[in-house]
Length: 159
Ligand SMILES: CC(C)(COP(=O)(O)OP(=O)(O)OC[C@H]1O[C@@H](n2cnc3c(N)ncnc32)[C@H](O)[C@@H]1OP(=O)(O)O)[C@@H](O)C(=O)NCCC(=O)NCCS
Image (cartoon, rainbow, N blue to C red):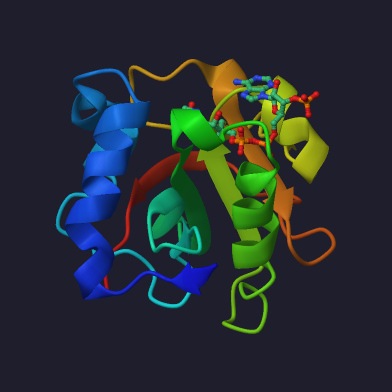
């Protein structure tokens, strides 16, 4: 697993196109990514011994009020490589760099049954732009208590 570089960009896009339904960029989470660069040092790729891309994970910064958070995703593993633990490796491996880089909380929009195993739970008071199913808005504190008292709309990160 290595940090994503500019040379990986289009291969990662192609992997996401393979792994997600067409129209993925219409999802509300993409509106939070428009015009904002992904987080350097956290977005990662996993390749096999021949250099074939097996999986990728990206992160964007977002805001909830004046609070910064990481938005995890997209994360995807090629259909021929799913179920080998690569998804978990990408999530835990990349997040292990987050605290040293100054981040204390991470959120995502996804399936609770999958992400629960990585310590994600419902963020009841954090609101993604519509249309988002609130039951899919999940978070994990990277530093104890980092989500305590955080509430409001998730907005695009600005300087
Ligand atoms: C979700 C994804 C990244 C998982 O990658 P992976 O390398 O297969 O995951 P792991 O090997 O770490 O974990 C596999 C386990 O997760 C389970 N799992 C995968 N997707 C799941 C989901 N949506 N809900 C519940 N469990 C899920 C598998 O059944 C398997 O369970 P097991 O360990 O009991 O056998 C991959 O399936 C994928 O790319 N899917 C399509 C894109 C996608 O949905 N991305 C996530 C967006 S929220």
